[in-house]
Length: 258
Image (tube, rainbow, N blue to C red; front, top):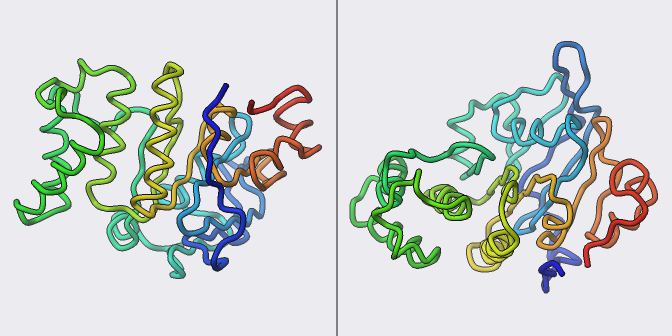
């Protein structure tokens, strides 16, 4: 049995998007990866992205962060056209944070030193840095791990640390790339709970991209299914797994989230 998200956003107080991709097309070496895509990510929702390899999930993350420019279309963050803004301005001005699938920490530093390193980049005042770090230590229950080098942490502990490091700058938008990959069931459940708590307590908009469809669908408000560079289904987890096109292109007939 998966962890079923108890609270899903059915209707938004306002249809206010925090990120919007308009008529986006992307080519890699003349191969079209994204085909005239339109996507809104709403404030304080948890959005999941699913689809086969190569359909554009990571490309959407790269478009939002500025790692990739669209060949056509526009990108809006918090109502501002960011299509031509560089990466550093997007992360600082609009409070973006990215948790990559690989890397993201310094393996020869302790857990505490990793947190300190990132805090020194983002927070000038030492007192405020200490307050933020202490809050994250308590929030993620790191007390017993502070002096352990990152390379000696378990897979789940590393993932928790990378997420905590991403939260140092109090992001408004958190992008999680394959957070459930290669983790055991209990660790995945722990991460699902962390993601849902970020939505409710920190009021963060979270976007999750993963191949673990069941684990993703059990913690998101809304999911999109990508195929051939387009969104072929969008809606609540139950709506997308019931969608005929999504079944044909991605899930198959027998898939469920229970």
